[in-house]
Amino acid sequence: MTTRGFTLIEMLVALAILAIALAATQRAMSGALGNAYDLRQRLLATWVAENRLAELRATRTLPDLGEIAGEEPQAGITFHWRIHVGATPNAAIRRVEIRVLAGANDTHALSTLVGYLGERR
Image (cartoon, rainbow, N blue to C red; front, side, top):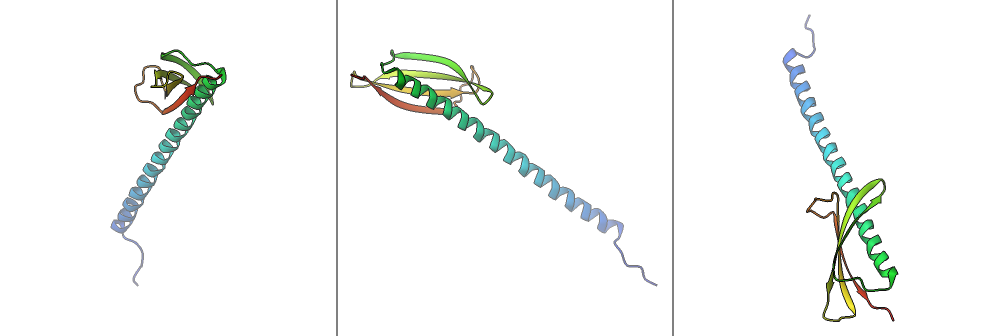
């Protein structure tokens, strides 16, 4: 009478293949979650930059040349922003570059927005 079944070696090979497949799946899921977190951070940072530009436009005055810095909470996260106001060939228009950072000492911007503000009459 011959007994059919799997040998110990066959079982170990099957378990090794399963372990490799599960590790690859876990790594792919971890990468996807990291990407989703980064995209969320960048989206929120873009909203912060748009809020800053909208606030500057709402004042209806030209901002002074130079740097402005501050922070703003968005969805429970505090973002740091830096605004550089520069001159243009037309004295009635200013170039505004808004950089939003995750931390006050960060050098890499999550979002950068450039806009132009004109003098309202």
